[in-house]
Length: 105
Image 1 (cartoon, helix red, strand yellow):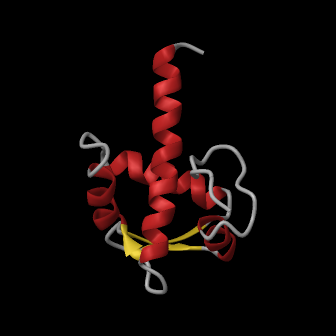
Image 2 (cartoon, helix red, strand yellow):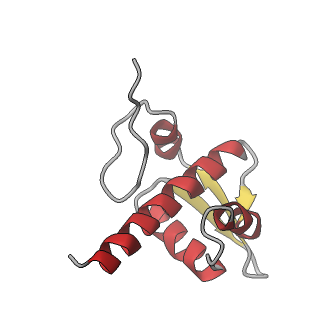
């Protein structure tokens, strides 16, 4: 894998983690993607709404988030039970999400 592909992969996986943590902070109400984009742009200033939706779609397919789409094409995002378990480090996290490792016991 070339260096640009590795950088792109690391970014996708980090964005997925940040989206999950952001959704966790908004529990139990959920959060719209417009607000989530601002959080992601704190780390990746060039992040786009399309990028956020693409990564949320990935997380939804894995059963980690629930997305409610309304008639105005807004997405409200909530963590699933399994997503909460991953963010709270109570279950293993499969590849594809850059969850930091806990190094202290």
